Each structure stands twice: as structure tokens, then as C-alpha cells.
View 1 (tube, rainbow, N blue to C red):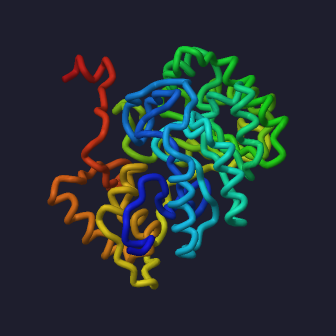
View 2 (cartoon, rainbow, N blue to C red):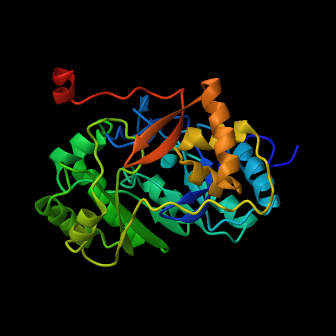
Amino acid sequence: MSARERPFKHVYGPVPSRRLGRSLGVDLVPFKTCSYDCVYCQLGRTTTKTTERKEYVPVEEVLSELREKLAADEPCDFIGLAGSGEPTLHSGIGTLIRAIKGLTKIPVAVLTNGSLLWMEDVQEDLLGADFVLPSLDAGDAHLFQWVNRPAEAISFERMVDGLESFTKRFPGEVWLEVLLLDGVTAYPAQVEKIGALVRRIGPARVQLNTASRPPAELFARAVSESRMLALASLLPGRVEVLTAREEAGSHGESGADPSEPEILTLLARRPCTASDVAVGLGLHVTEALKHLEHLCAAGTVKTATTDDRTFYIVTERSPRTESPAERHAG
């Protein structure tokens, strides 16, 4: 069975990423094992909120899958350590990064919420990566608690101190994601607070983002592109505004026909449009739709619409909740 035909437990994609182009994903923790429980998370509510670092999955098992994927010679821009939880919770991430660097020249990027960068061992583990992409979603402690809902050990100042000290120490590039929510943080006063912290942290670039997929909480609303562009001017340094423009999806020249378990493996890590699936798995978009419609009919996949785009989501997901106002209104 080829790497294209069999589903993997830890390696997925390549997937289209607004931050990293075409990225081969590596998942290092069980589903929704995280140090945050962000209101906007595309994977739903956190089921295991923790700061405990351990070997959640065997490093050699991950490397075995990765070797097989790399042998298939599928084009990708990055190997992204991300997935369905917080990757820095894995105590072997440093060993894994070093091993990947010995396997390929494809740059390694770590997509992290940045919550554990105050830990010396986490900083040491990430020094071998080429890029680290942490997050900063609020400019003060109150909104940090509201948006990110961190584990008890993580204070706002501890998190910011970790971002600052790691960025100063890291030999590669730090790309800081700032995710804004309509009616919460997408105000000039709030963005100015974030901007002051960005100056303190000093990343190579800021990637300004908003909720683009169905969120964990229904009240976590996206900010319009025009509003994002206006607010970007309040942030210092190099700022990229990430938009929800989709790929064309006609990347089917290979004629590959992935198994539906492979599609489910992709959707388990992130809700995708048909175009996302097509680009990530090398299909024409009509072929991707055929598989997705079959999975919907079987009840293993459902759809959700955000900003007039249809996303496909595996049905085994943690529940979403409503805001207090919505509960009273219902």
C-alpha cells in the first residue's frame, strides 16, 4: 500500500495553508489536548487542557510515517508541526525537529499558541526549527482570559515574557499571528495595546488573522477584510493580512484518487472546503466534491457555512456552546 493510499495517524496533507503555502502537517498530541481553550478554535472545545509535557505519541512512529510521506516526493513548502492540539506539549519535539532536519531540506515550522515559551526546555527544543509561528490574540490580561481561556499555570505576563525572551534568542524567524474577533478585539484601542506588545516582542513579521472556519463558540465572529486592512496600520513592522481567498482547486494532474480515510484524516485536523481538500490531496475540485458528498451521505462528515463558504467537518467533534445572550434569546 502506497503512502497515498493508506491513512496515517500523525502525518497529514500536504494541506493548503494561508500562513505557510502548501504544508505537510505533523500532529504530535491527541485531539484537542491543548494549553488553551480558544473561543475561535476550528476544532471545537478543548477536552484536555493541560501544561504537562510528555511523549504523547512515539517519536519514532511519527518519523516512520514522515519518511514514507517524504519518499512519495509530494511537493510542499514547509513541514509544519501543528495539528489538533498544542505541539510544544510533546516532550520529544526537539528530538523530532533534529531528526526531520536530517531527513530533508524542507524548512521546519512550528505552529504554536506560544503559551509555553516561558519554559526553558520548550525554548531549547524549538531552537532547531527554521520558523516558529506563535500567537498573540489579546493586548491585556482580561481579554486574554476571555479569548484564549488558558490553563491555570499560564498568566498573561508569563506568556508575553515567553514570547519576548524566545524571539530574542531564536536564530530563525518568528512570525507572530494576531487573530482578531469582531466585537471583541477588533477595535483600534485593543489593537494598539497588541501593537505595543509586538514592539516589545520584536517578531520578523506579524500575520493578522481572523476566524475563517466554524469556531468553537458561535459568538466568535470574523472581522471583515476591509476592517482588517484598516487595523493593520496600527501594528508595527512587517504586517501581512491573511484573507480567506480560496485556491482554484484544479491541481489534479496527478490523477491520484485518495482513500476516504485519508480525507477524514485531513478533516480531523482542520475543517476544509472542497477546494482545500482538492489542493491538499492533489485532486480536481469536482473529484473532491464526489468523495465529500459520499462521506456526508454516510454521516461521517457534516457541513457548516462561514462567510458564504461551505466547510466539511468530521462529525466526531467536541460540542460548541452559545454565548449567554444567545442562550437567553433561545
